[in-house]
Amino acid sequence: MTSDSNDIEFRSVAKRYGSVTAVSDISLGVPKGAFVALLGPSGCGKTTCLRMIGGFEQPSAGMVYIGGQPMNGVPAYRRPVNMVFQQYALFPHLDVEQNVAYGLKQMRPRIAAAEISRRAREALEMVRLAGFGKRRIHEMSGGQQQRVALARAIVNKPKVLLLDEPLAALDKKLRTAMQIELQSLQRELGITFMLVTHDQEEALSMSDLVCVMNAGRVVQIGPPQEIYDRPANLFVADFVGKTNRIAATIEPGANAVRLANGVGLAKPARANGTAGAAMVAFRPESISLVRDDTATLHGTVTHRIFLGSSVEYSVEVDGLGDFLVTADRRSLDESDLAEPGERIGLRFDPNAMHVFPA
Image (cartoon, rainbow, N blue to C red):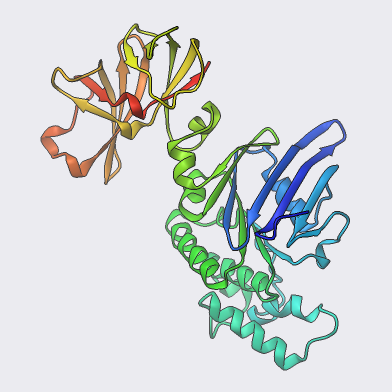
């Protein structure tokens, strides 16, 4: 039995292409009305999962459920889902309203022409394109075409909307605007959105739940803040956001971690692993540059990158190599900025570090 609270469920799902395993033994549930991001590097299996939900691929093993109903063997056009592709797949010979109405015209029993037109115009209003129905596709900007594709996908009122990197072709400013539009639309419709992306910022900023994948498996699933602040392993810490990695040793019988250069730090309560070789991970924003004796480590600034609201430094730390440090400019004035070549101290709270088995 599937959970009544889930719109999508995978039960021990695998997908193989000959000798290649694209997805391996995935079990997960997606709550009704959630905005979920499948995040991971190229080839991790996230798009294959999306295609199995959409009906474009069938599992080699396991079961896929949508709305509590088994979907194995059910063709794509009989599933209560719609999909927005990266390239939008709009018909250039049809105008905007005809593109949006296309799916309604294929439905059986047939829908009256007046009802089709009304629902198409309603969908265009939802994506802020009222009055654009008679425009040709080539007359629309990239962001407008993306919204046409969204209107076409939601006009059938699906249980689940699948988004396959739909913002990848947009420039950064428009992509940010469309992220906000998608969040607003999802809240307005109240249906489940599942987004595939390799963009960490996109996943963290848009979704209620982030499902991090690697090598065909789910390695962690949880709210964005949990994924960022409490990564389950070194892969998640490395892939989601920026991090500094340091070889270390967890000392036997002591609540201490000794870094590769011999500096000892108190072991945080949530540290993973028992005594022995370990890897320590620090977020760049958890490190402060200081010019006093409160520093834990010392090094030389090699690069400074001005980012507007923040400054990124590369610091060559004695005995440990390069560190990335992010400083919020609201806490600095021009006289506080460290210069390349300057000797500087690094201070951080040991509780901000993540410790993983090597």
